[in-house]
Image 1 (cartoon, one colour):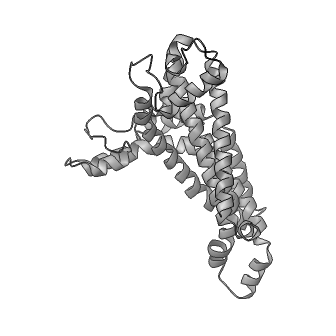
Image 2: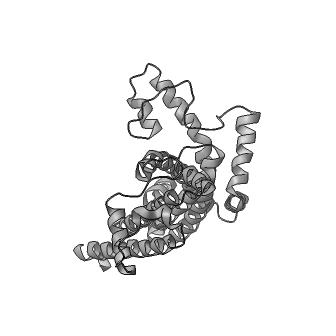
Image 3: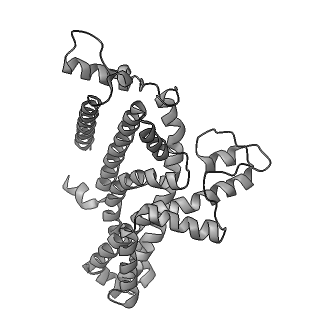
Length: 324
């Protein structure tokens, strides 16, 4: 266990070091006056000294001042990041809650018309551009049917004091008389962006679950469970799904980067005040300080999450644990 922890920490530090190498190299192409907060001003400095000075500034939280707003970039990132996390978690839950049962149903009905329909639909969902899918759902559900709001996280008629930055939590923590109504409104605003962002992961989870379940259902212990007279529901949801979830758990870590990348487009379509929309606005304004800090922070978070998922996958797989 200690060796595994040490190995994962070394891999994490190595990944973060490579990441800082890349971002440090990118800063050489930015206008130097825009990145004075991370550039060594010593006349005797060389590339190594500049890199060490760069790391010191990053770890001290000195990410610079936004050229567009004149505020600390770190403060801006911490303000917008909870909205992105809330949207990404909602999209991930939507993809898992819908995708896993669909994959199980397709595996149980292999080579039937239901299976072929699900596989074809997931292929279409995986192939659709997010911006086109998002605008289509806005046109249909928001503008034509009026079922969901078009943009933002909360209606303008509600005044909720930000505490955690997560709107669903802040509405419940609020002492306003309309707190529950505000929670429902925030949930109402979250539904459509979460569906748009979670469509691609949903298609992937469905196909992975289907393939994994087909393999597990052919196992000897499943045939033994059937011979003992266990119900089909117990075999699927208790015995088979436990082993079939291992590949899904591994793929979840890879989908984190897909979700965060997708927020760049999804947050823009729905005017969602998150990191994706914040970075895209920085591109339009040529705010190099914001771009540098935001991309470094997001990339570091993706690396850390993938490492955590790898550790969880190791402990969830008995074969790997016994082998270790």
